[in-house]
Image (cartoon, rainbow, N blue to C red; front, side, top):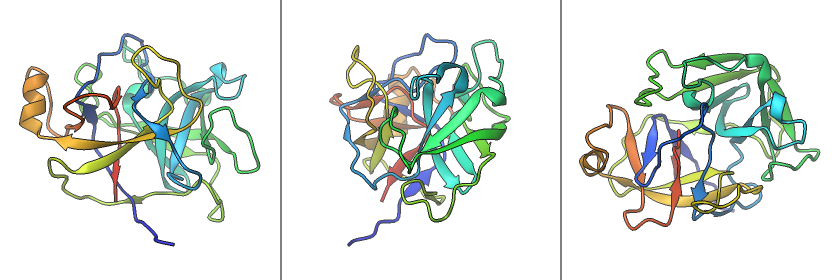
Length: 228
């Protein structure tokens, strides 16, 4: 078996074909052009949910995240702050890992409440600058867990045209239904100046664009790009 080391890049990523959200707390809404993730792949992927909406298991999903240590999940600040700047209560946040299906509950399903939510102090809900959040879990993920494991973090430069991987449970077409299955797709890093021009010079330092110039693959906004 060939083993791969995956690297997650910590910055806000805006896809080239993104649209602007209209909801107060924007969820992870699209993974257009994705294909189902294979079992035992992307084991760091977490589903972040609002408990008040998750009485039917899976319905409370709002954003994805990545397990970066045995009790820490990396996600996006916009998932937890509304248009008025109000944070959602930590007591209403649940993190679920270990499954590819949102509605699946098996012996591998890991569930934890959140002890602490840390929003990047530079986060700007208007520009999405520093759109980073850290969730400290109340329950430690066992080192022996077979399908929910931390990803390796590295600070690495990402060149234009580098192929990266995106993933999520969002809609599978522009106006389609959300996917119950975790989906993944490959995108390429787009030159900052090209993307900045397309967005009317609205990008900020630390942002990066990824997508396909011809379209067909998209997420609304992503807070991680993975490559190996």
